[in-house]
Length: 229
Length: 229
Image (cartoon, rainbow over all chains, first blue to last red; front, top):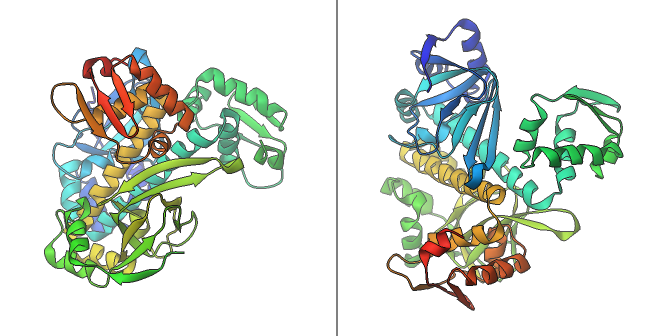
């Protein structure tokens, strides 16, 4: 259960004001949205909401990691999104009273989540076109991300999906480059629609394309080879 | 190439006014959106737009069938959506000038497509909150559909995906029921992320669950057995 007890502190407000949703929103609107916002604190593994439950707040990850997923038979799960600090979720419930969650939400690390009252968000949506436009931009971004995931699932092999992810996330510049995965490999596996074993096999396969994995640190020795994976 | 030559006739206007996007929109706004709208006519197979190209209209299928898809290597394709009469697409380009298509669009049957000028749609978005709310509802519906597809791809076997589709689309009431697929089986295969052969195998597998297929006509003899597929 989500217990919201804390008020936003200055750093929380900064995190929220920097997130994509608040980018183009009028300062007065942002202030009204954040007025009365609360923060909930979660352990790794905590369920934030379940599919079919009502959602009464627009949520922003202040700290930690949240995944949104659906459950199938025999305990199988399908990840639909992973959200890190500054990411917004729950935006689909903004449209009407009683709108329910389309999936489950779970904290994967100790997490702090800001909750913006949904009733107030709906009011702002009707009053301020800059906020409506920001929400639409967020929805379109989410649509695009989901289209990417669906197309990658349908078009790419496991090692191609991993290669794409690495190319999108590795630093600019001449190889060799190295970077740290923003989360555990099991989270990456879920995000890419792979079983953890399939991710391991994909990493092994990519060794011949110049990818070296040390824990969460990834070294890419040859970007061109990776593009051709 | 899309050549828009026709003006909307009365039946076209009726089709558009009945579509989800126009449901809650103020009549004056609807009238302004439709004023100046044009119709393009396409053969089966025509490409309507390509990924990366600018989109200058919000499109409504008046007649026919449109699929939206991405291309991969070696001619592989991944369907992201199939749209029939009354469906709207291209809505993601409404947000900003120069927004480009995130996928290809293709007519699968001889099709008539209404084009609502995107510039005007953006103007209406800024002026009328009822239209902004309708666009947001459409975006959320699309998001939900894409989440369904991604979750089904990741959680269900081929025959389970087909069983789900049949259960969602077969008529209410006591079995046996029968209904006609709204499009060819090859389109259904693409929509469900299956190769045509995999769809055939799934239909064969479902015969033991009381599904009889005759061309595009599907008979479901035992809904409970299908639910347990």
